[in-house]
Structures are given as structure tokens and as C-alpha cells.
Image (cartoon, rainbow, N blue to C red; front, side, top):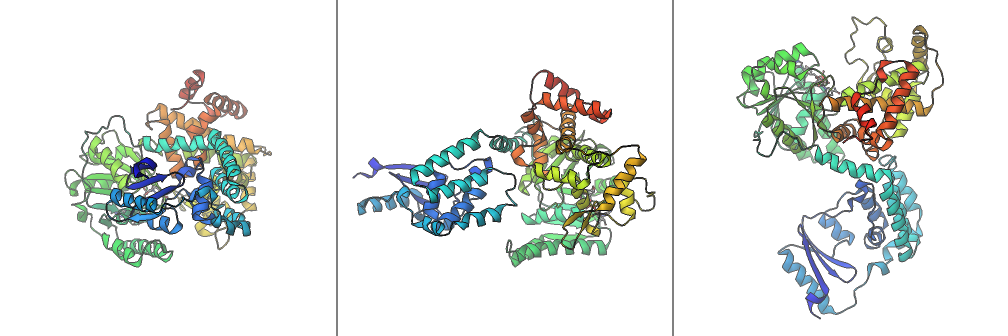
Length: 600
Ligand code: NAD
């Protein structure tokens, strides 16, 4: 038999797939990775993927692959039986020789559908599925697709092949037609879209970034510096005192050693990365940096003083960035004689972990600086989103309205842990009050001037400053497990009485609407003001920076799924109910709803 008559030759990115009837016989280049990423789009590998994979690699491996979507290395694929041969030399030649060898043997090819040797272990021990479910429960909470993938693999084990195929196809259709896969597919494109900036085109030059400086070795500065060292970029951290510098560098080392103890990096990696980080007490040492990121206290005067000094030190063409969470970037830029070189790079805490980077464009920021920072963000493995200047930019500005409403709900009678439960059940990793406790209630609080006028004052004065002090809105045990604190509920009741608010029972539906609808309304205002380039950018900020469940797409996608007209109607309902201007719908939303449009 001629080779050409039975072989479909395909070569995609170094993978030679020689399809000989059914099954495919694969020869794979070293270095190529294989995986089934459908779950990341809220789907499952239809067309038999879930029925064939466990027959080839075994049930446990198949479960891992389809529920994580993570690719495996060529060596792992070979070991698991997913490929037949790793090719070291010329992929095409070696793959053809391999195929010819198979043909020369002139034996019938076994079909995957007929194999079930690797299913037997799971047939003997069906508990494997429940165990696996328990193992991934926390990570996949709220997502439908991982569970549907598991059910398909269960079908591969418990049903004949053709029945399993029918089960797979039914579950695939359900996912495809459901809201989660729509949201996850939308988000896949949203993330890529965020990289595009309408007035910064391909011809805009990029500034080479070789050396980076960070000012401040506190919570943020240390994490920011780690991002550079992780990808091999040398970084100099400047502090005001040796003590602060040593403390900051010590935290970085401990973080790396922790990662090494979990086997995620080697001891040599720890040293290599630490070698890339140097400490200094002199701003002057940043003279040759191409990019300097300031991460000192959130205080306008301090930041302006630093930018003024930096301006006199850094070389022409260098980028000066601030990690401010909410301050006016234009005012900071005005402290220099080159505001075009100033930009905001708003990292999220912990800065070495969180994927989001808000790139804040000032009025004068040069396009080359924007383009460079967007590209640089990807180099340090962040997802950058360009935002404009306003209090809190996109992420925190939207967060402020949710937090304000959570507080108001607690005053009106919904205990903080109930508000948090509703947000958690919606899919956030934690609720509003847990988030405040994690950040620390004393951010921006001053012991000297505190007069017990707010609930926050009272909590901080009582030493309840959040998780770090073992108490805040919640009580925490030694494992940082929260339990509702009766004194906090009483405190809200006391402040409510003082404000003449009669507390009442509040439904879950009202809690959710009153937390989430203001976020959408603020998003609409942000769009109208041009602070975000597009609605989907707001969603990228929310999924990567604030744990909005990706299976709900982000606040603006969620608004579209509810319908902007429904959002408007509910905002007006709460405006009437409370008589509070807080609920005034954005004009942009009003127009969108009237035109029957959607956020885009
Ligand atoms: P931090 O208090 O942990 O660290 C600030 C560090 O800056 C301190 O170590 C201090 O010694 C140092 N410093 C102060 N003045 C200095 C100077 N003139 N030169 C060099 N070092 C100086 O604060 P942080 O939480 O890391 O916040 C830093 C910035 O990042 C703030 O603007 C904050 O708003 C922003 N931010 C914080 C978070 C967060 O969650 N902590 C998140 C995003 C952005």
C-alpha cells in the first residue's frame, strides 16, 4: 500500500500528525506541548475528546487534563501514551519514516474506541471521581465546565463508546448554549482586545527597557521588584533607611524561599533572582534606569517631592511611573519638567501574584511611553489595561461604590457576614468586609485624629484593624479563619439608631443588586468620561484585579446579560426606595437602555 494513499500529513507548529484511519498516530517534536484547553472557554473537548483521551492516557490523567486545560510537555505526553514517538531530528522525515515503519508491519491498527485497558482501574474504583471532584472543588467553584468534563469521563468509563459519545455531545451542547461559555469566550477576546489602543499604532516607537528602578521596598515595592527579577531584568530598589531596605529585601527572599520550598522554583533560582535585585539608599543610583516605578506612601506631597528629585536624576528618555492607587497622576507629572515621561503603573496586591496592571495615561503621557509600558507589562507576565486619570482609576473607583453600598446594607440591617456570603455565592473569592479586613482597616486611618465618628474609627480604636491584628469586621483564629463578630453587628445597629435608620431583614436578591448594580452604573460613567477605552477593558480589570468570576464575564458583560434596560429599571427602583442620589443612573446608561443597545 502506498503511503500517500492512507496518510493525511499535517504539520502544525512542529506537530506532525499522521492520521492513519482512526486512531491518529502522532509523532511529536520535543518541546511541543499538548493539551485540551476547551475548559478555559467554558466548554469540553467534544468530537470524542473526552471519550478517547481516558482510553489513551487513563482516567486520572484525563481528568486532570480536561478540567485544568493545562498543556503537558512532549515527554509527559509520550509517557502518558498520548503520542507514539518523539522526533529529535527532521520532523517531517522522521515522522514519515515512523509511519512507513507502521505500514511495513502490515498489522491492523488498534482503534482507540476499542481500547479499554486504561479504563479498568476506574471501573474497579469508581470513587476516583468523587475524590477528584473534592480535590478541585475550591479552584473550580461556580464553574460548570469542569464538572461537565468530569461527567463525560465518567461516561467513558461506565458507558459503551457510542453511548459515551452521545452523552458527550449532549453535555457539550448544554455548555455551548449556556451563559458561562458565552462569558468565558467573550472574556478570551476581551483580554486580547485590551492590548489595542486606538491612537497608539504600530509605528509608535518603543523605548528599550533594560534596567528598572523601584522606589520604596514596602508591600508593593518588594512585589513589583520581584516581577522584574522573575524574568531576568535587573532592578534597583531605593529606600530611605538601611533598616527599611533590609526588611524589604528580607521579605523578598522569604517569598522566594517559600516558593522554592513548594518545589516551584529551585534554590539556584532563588539566588539568581536575588542577585538581580540590588538595594540602595540613593535616588542617584537610578540615573541609568530606563524605567523607574515609585511605590512610596500614598501621599501627594511625598510623591511630588520624589518625582521632582527623580526628574533631575534620571536620563533623558527614561520613563517615570507611579504605583499610586488613586492620586491625580497629572498633579504628580506636573512636579517634573517632562510630564510626557510620566505614567501610572498600578499594580495590585500581592504585586508578584496579581495579573492585572492598570496603565494610567496622564494628560501629557507620550504615546511611546504608553506603548512601551503596555509591552513591558506583558514581558513581566501581567495583563495591562489602559485607563485614564480619575480618583481610583477604573478598578478602585468601581470598588468604592460597592464597598459604600455594602456598608449601607449593614447599617440597614444586613449583617456583614450575610453581605459577604451573597457576594461569595455570586462568585467573588471574598466579600466586601473580608476584603477590607484583608487590606487592613487602618489604611488612611490616623490614630491621632480618630474620634470614634465612624465605624472604622471605632474598630481601629479597639485594635480591630483587620486580619493582621486578628480582628476587624470579623474575628480571626490563628489560621485566619473568620467568624462573624457580634460586636460588629451591634456597632452597625448603634450607628443605624443614631442615624435614624430602622434596621430590617434584607433579602439576598436586594443585597446582590445593591452591591453589583452600582458597579455597572459607575462603569457606565467611566465609559462616558473616556476613562476606559471600551466596556470590555473594565471587565478585564474586574476579572484579573478583583476576582469577578470569569464565568460571568465582568460587570459590563453581566450588565449586557441582564439587559441595560433592566439595569436602568432597577437603579431607578433603588433611587425611589432610598431617595438617595447615589442611585442616579448614568446618562450613558439611560441612552443605551432607551436605544435598546448594549455595552461594547
Ligand atoms: P508601604 O507603607 O508598605 O511601603 C512604602 C515604602 O516606601 C516604605 O517602606 C517606606 O519606607 C518607603 N518610602 C517612603 N518614602 C520614601 C522615599 N522618599 N524614598 C524611598 N522610599 C520611601 O506602602 P505600600 O502598601 O507598598 O504602598 C505603596 C504605594 O502603592 C502607595 O502609593 C499605595 O497607594 C500603592 N498601592 C498599594 C496597594 C496595597 O494593597 N498595599 C495596592 C496598589 C497600590
